[in-house]
Amino acid sequence: MKKSFIPIIISTVMIFSGCQKNQIYTSDFFTMDTLCSIKSDVDTKETEDIILSCNTSLDMYSGKLMEFNEIEETDDAYIYDITEKTLSLVSLYGENVDITSGELTSLWGISSGNKTVPSKDEIRKALSTTGYEKISLKDGIISKEKETKLDFGAVAKGYSCDLVYKNLSDKNCGYAIVSVGSSSLLFGEKPDGTDFKIEIKNPDGNIPLGMIETKECFVSTSGGYERFFEADGKTYSHILDVKTGYPVKTDIVSVTVLCYGENGGIKSDFLATDIFIGGTENLKKHLSSADYKIVVADENKKLYVSEGIKFTPYENSGYSL
Amino acid sequence: MKLITVRDIAIILLILIPSIILLAINFKDDGTYAEISCDGNVVKTVPLSEDAEFSVNDIKFSVKENSVCVISSPCPDKICVKTGAIKRNGETIICLPQKVSVRVVSEDKETADIVVG
View (cartoon, rainbow over the protein chains, first blue to last red):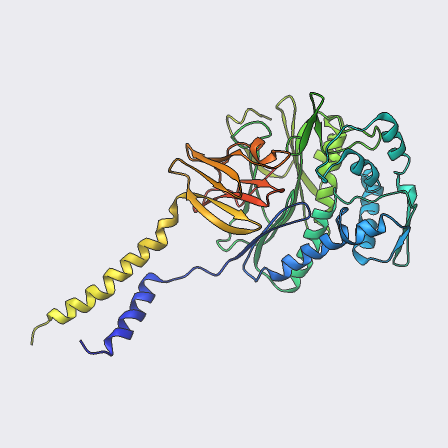
């Protein structure tokens, strides 16, 4: 056979077997005290950098927030911005989520790995440092009392999704799924044009609670079952109640919140924790809200689902409407 | 002159056979797999269809009945062990102290894009 046939054969083979799908980039990494994963039709590097720089400013146990927690003032743009946005959510939804509870978080050893049950005196002391009146914002400077420690654990993951959303919009990205632990961004439209499918884990079984089908959105979850520790024969949730100083007592076992559009990330993150702490007695106003949607499961295996959300509960999950 | 020569057939086969093999390789990923990552980099991929036991970073894994779970880990809080078995596309087990994660990956179109909660 003549040599000139070989390139023709090779290229024909490539055409026949080819039709490579559109390139999808993926990336997994650990930061913000959780696993982050990115899947996108644009390079993931910028998204990674955004999440990593959020962590540099907002992690309680390293970087800028750790420094600020020892002093009274900072001009860190991330700390200022996330505080400002949290304050506006607090004015809308109340103070269940308290970013001034850092002293309490450290005391309970949440995120630091040192898990102990503190004494009543220690808790009383930590509680005296909390409260939104302890912080103020002015002209790019955030001030607080020296003893007050900020903890953005309930909002930072969602906030980082907001920054990613802005960047992806600017870049005209077509499609991305970005998870920062318990908060995620489902961006744009899937290559096959179908809705995004979100499955909600079962808090105590193998069959998921059900499937949500949705257009672009932010989704955040909260639940007491995933992070906990046991001490003196009791099980403790990682979410603290700033009214009592103890891990929160709630009849809700799983909260999923969907928000849409700009700043939906921090809002969904905030609301997931807020609704979890509030319990089923405070659900009514959330179920009827027009601008965000929720799926909640309580300890009596009942599901609560917002109007206007496409949610299909799975049979045999043990939970029902 | 013959319509088809031996050489023509040889060329057709030379094109067809590698094409089919490459296509088969592309379609092979139909099953469900567990991807085990260390610090974000995939270090091991195992099919959930075959029962197996193995270790990554001192964490012991078991694949059984189309699901994967962590049997033991040197980490202090054992959240990875408590997570239990996972089998659905997108589900993860995370061990923060060891920086190890396991993700179920499936090519099935009907499965979820993301598992939350």
